[in-house]
Image (cartoon, rainbow, N blue to C red; front, side):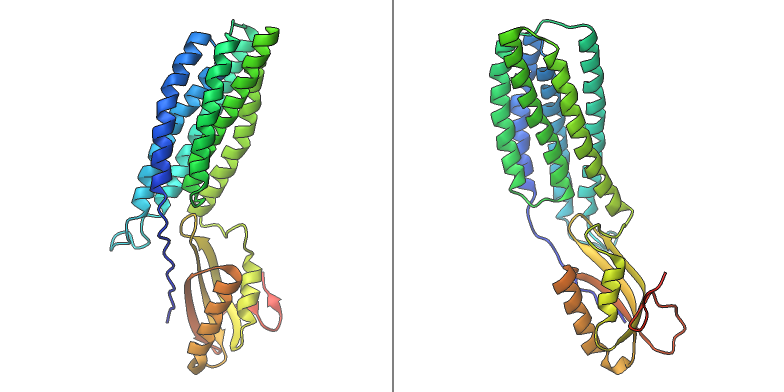
Length: 302
């Protein structure tokens, strides 16, 4: 006997991704031309980020579109994990970009080249405004792993614009060109940590890890504490996608005839305390031979 409580998310994540794509792609071309003419590595790196952002936003838009497809006979859980896959692709792509920019920066430190600081400042200022606007559009949407992956690229570009603006100002007023590759390396370090965190969170979903904000023993103890429950075993908690948490467990009860009331108490505890809505619970009579992981008498078992 099972209880399923399906919680569907109808939020539309497609619109902010499409708007971000249009704005980003348009300015990427302008910035790439400016970086080539001025000779600025920071500006060229920022343009490269924006071009890859366009790809990441397009990928995110396709994933968001797929995630809206309803469940079918073949895809019984729906297409929600398309957004998780998109987040992984975006995180890996960002890591590759970080490596490429870092290598180019060290090459530029060894062999400095002239940079037109004034042009860099003008284009980087416009780029900063563009990146802020795209980040604002994406930040307003629900923070799924997919949106986070796209936002990671945009925030990388935003920091790149700041670095290019600072580098252009320093070069314009002092002529010290090493500031350009040095700031590029700094931005690479900042983006690296964000990329690894996004990659970790996405892999957690695919590996069906217990969500980091939840504790399996704590949830089990809460279930075992419900009136009418003797013990809990085969407890599993995982994410179906970046938003929906799923739980399944076997519940040993004192009286099977009281299961409907016990089930209602269990569902309320899971929804109200842990915000878990996709629930599968199997009742078992007390005489079944099973090893509980949580029971009312002795608490958690290893």
